[in-house]
Image 1: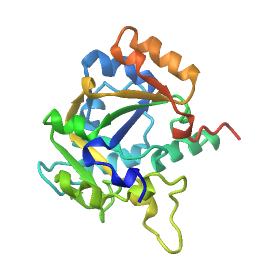
Image 2 (image 1 turned 180 degrees about the vertical axis):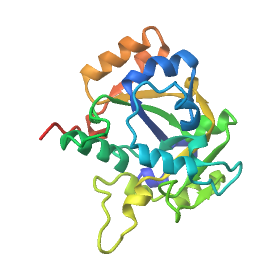
Image 3 (image 1 turned 60 degrees about the horizontal axis):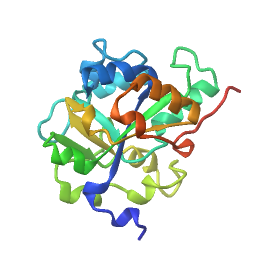
Image 4 (image 1 turned 90 degrees about the vertical axis):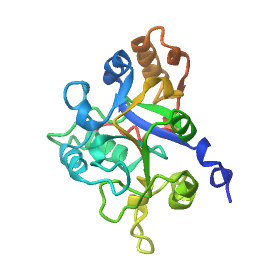
Length: 226
C-alpha cells in the first residue's frame, strides 16, 4: 500500500476550488458558504455548469443532518477532478453558454479532515459524486478510509474503462461541510502558476494566507484554446 493509503483519516487533505475573483468576497465575510447561500450574491464569478448546480440543489443527502447537496460546502479528496476537467475543456473548445475562462484562474482552498473535525463542524463524506443516485454517504470518521478509493484519488487518469465503469464517479468523492466553513480553517491556497499566486496574494493583502500560497501546476489541466 502507498503512504497515501496508510494515512490517518484526520490527515487527509480536502480541496475546494473557486475563481480567484471570488477571493475578496469570501475573505471579507470570513467563511465559505454553501451553494444555496453563495448564489444570493456572494459568488462574483460562477464556474460551475448551471444544470449540474441545479441538480445538486435537488439531490438529498442520505445522512444526518440531511437536506440537499446544495446546503453543503463541497470539498474533494483529490485535485484534477472531472468537474475541473470539464471547465478546462469548455475553455479549450470555446463551448458556448459556459464559463469561458478555463481552469488556470481557479484557486484551491485547502484544509484537512482533522481541522474540520476539531472545529466541531457538521460534515458528510461520500464515496463518489454526491449528485449521483448510487453514491453512499457517511458521517463516521472511522469508515471514511474504507469508503473512498484512495488509489484512484492519486491516479493521473480517472476515466471509466470497460473493466470499471464507475471510476469517474468515485474520483469525485466529496467531503461536504454543512452550511459554511470559516476561512480560518483554510491551511493553504493552491494556484496554477507564479502569476496567479501573485494575483491571489494581492487580493488577500495582509491576510495570513498570503504567505501560504503554493504553486501546483500539476493540480490543473491548463488547456489553452484550440
